[in-house]
Image (cartoon, rainbow, N blue to C red; front, side, top):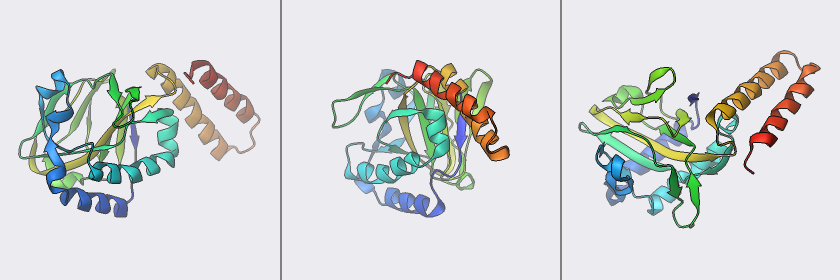
Length: 228
């Protein structure tokens, strides 16, 4: 299931993050520093060192925004969210086809988390750079994603994906992973569709007698499939 989540950050938040990233200086390192064996062979970009104060400071507002985002909560059913990381592509930089690692160690915690979902939060306006599309392989074929600044895409971490070369300008983004309460993508998709149907019915027919039954079905399925 691939979900586009608009306006995770507003324009002022995006400007603040971009300004801090542009001034980050030596905090930018070779992106291969955190790539696995497969990814390191096809990865050409820069990223903020994840153990830097900059990464910790800038990740906080993103995590806070996600906690308030109804669509993200519904689609991801998050159990753990990896601390947001930040990358930069420019001058023909790209990331070839790869699949994200299945398990990551959360920095400074000793906690390992399963990467059920991958997320990319765009911080550069699409007109500010050429190329840099995120190409994601899913059951419907290849999906090309290039979103406005502040918007995010959420997709299964099992997906083969890549970032095309940036031929003009610079592409700034935040990326991270989610361990979901519901491990199976098909089950998450059912719960998401059911939740969105409940939201629409609540809006269009408030007080409808079916709402109680549908809400009960949602929570009973979540209870059945949740790993908590």
